[in-house]
Length: 289
Image 1 (cartoon, rainbow, N blue to C red):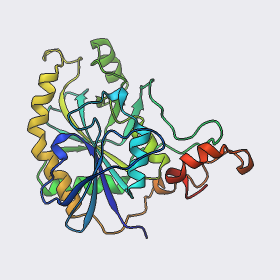
Image 2: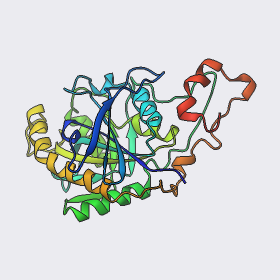
Image 3: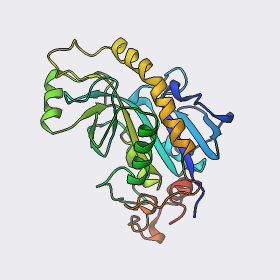
Image 4: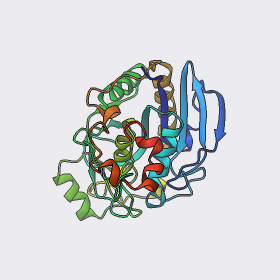
């Protein structure tokens, strides 16, 4: 079995989790580019934690300006086996109120300006993504939310938009017609890249506002989002800290195979592979290459 290392991608409210010990920032270089920031290593109880500020400390990076490949590659190099994304989202459903937490199980990817795969010409790979999140990891998050008495919804579809602008009313109504539940700007291609890296992935979506569809609410504003994020910070810290405290010592094999997703994914014959690309894939796909 593999030792479990819990990775967290999120904002500034998660830098200092309750019970975090031996914390230190470290550089983790990646051949794919510059990660958003240094990684913060530490532990809660017996669980090793690796935290990455998605937008960098001080929120320097826009959703489209994040190097998602470098981030996931760096986390893989740091030994992360299970990765939890903590993300702000807008609600597309009346019953999902600002302040609610949603444990996502599906995604619709509308991003267009981001590198979405580690693979390409010279080493072609196709992974299964029908079930984008790791169910055992989601269940552990759910149990942590119950233990901390945090209101949450299990299951939901996340629309990932390019941004940085918020949705028009027409776009918002379109997304609602698709049956989607929340909308955000950051979880794609993050989730796809985690699957390629064989890291179990799950999302805690924190609702900050009703998206532009809602007639009873003013247009979405940054001030609105920040105010709700501030209210959610304590809940998010408690939820992640409880998850870490109760986390198993060994990585649990994923029932949908997210930790073996590359078993039959590489299509390019060994003699036809680009050595330069293969060298960059050492952390992500070294197990099969």
